[in-house]
Each structure stands twice: as C-alpha cells, then as structure tokens.
Length: 219
Image (tube, rainbow, N blue to C red; front, side):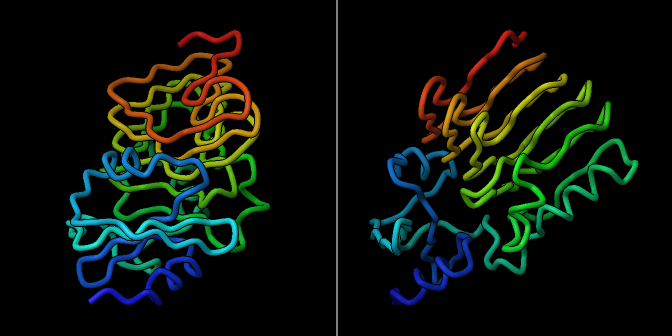
C-alpha cells in the first residue's frame, strides 16, 4: 500500500527511492513527465503528483523499479566521482549512482572538472544527479569519452549537464531534466564534441538550445 509520507522522505533526501514497488522521482517545473519516465524505461499503473514548495515529485505506482538503486545510501557523491576521475586510472566504471551531496553545491557549482586527457567514464547505466543545483561536468581535457550515463537534473547558466571547452565524445547516454538559465539546457559546446546515440528528454534553456547549444564549436 502506498504511503504519502514516502514522497516526503524522497523530498528530504533529494533522491528517487522505491517502496513496495512504487517509484518516486524528483521533477522540475515544466518538465515533461512522460518523457522522463520513458527515458528511464519505467512501466507503471498510474501516477500521483506531490508538490513540496516549489518542487514537484512524481510517484509511479506499481512500477518496475528493480533496476534502480533503492536508497540514497546506495549512491556516492560528487567528491567520489571527482576523486575517481583524478585517480590516475584512464577508465572509470561506475558501480552506483552519483548524487550531489547536501554540502557539495559550492565546490561543484561549475561541475566536476574533466581536465585529464584521455579519460573514459563508463556509467554502466547509472545516473549522475545534480539535484537541480549545479552543473555535472565542465570539460577542458582532450580525448575524453563518456558512455552509458544518465545525466539528471543538472543546472547552470551554460550547459546544465555539460559545458565543453575541450574534446569530448558522449555515447549511449540520456540527458533528462537539465536546465540552463542561459543557453544549452543539457549541453553547451565551445570546442570539439561528438554525441552519439544519446536521448534528450525534458531539458530546458531560458534562451537558446533546450537540448544543445553550440558556440563557435565543432560538433
């Protein structure tokens, strides 16, 4: 049986959770819920909406949630991913979702710095969730590959999920619910960028490029 207090718990934890087959997803004003659910390949019986202040949560009743992490404690924070990228290893494979920590906004306001040449980030289907507070990646390195990542709820003035000033290739990934207060809701590209077999759903920008904005760039 669905318990409304579960939506409040999700609000407090800033995360999607599951309980007895129900899934709670954090959403933003104007986000297309159907697109969001489609991007995560969720099947469900019906939806309930909960508003807490200026934020909205979508509850999918009797959803197929088995492939999702169940608690915030299952996820790791931005600092963990930052350390992984700068560990000296050329390829990093995620074994959990990455969620911006409650105390990480100021440190990662412009995103985790992708400033190491030749790194590969394999999300293995996991999400990187900025919780609507920061950008996810700022790329200045060369020959960077990102694959199999779900970029969720990034926020910035240029590129909610990724701002590229380097050389990066993004493959087989989803960009969902990212927002830019200027250009490039999901991606803002100023240099060399290739995006292959990716889907953009529910991303928004105040000015141009709800999904992607190119500025004197090669893409």
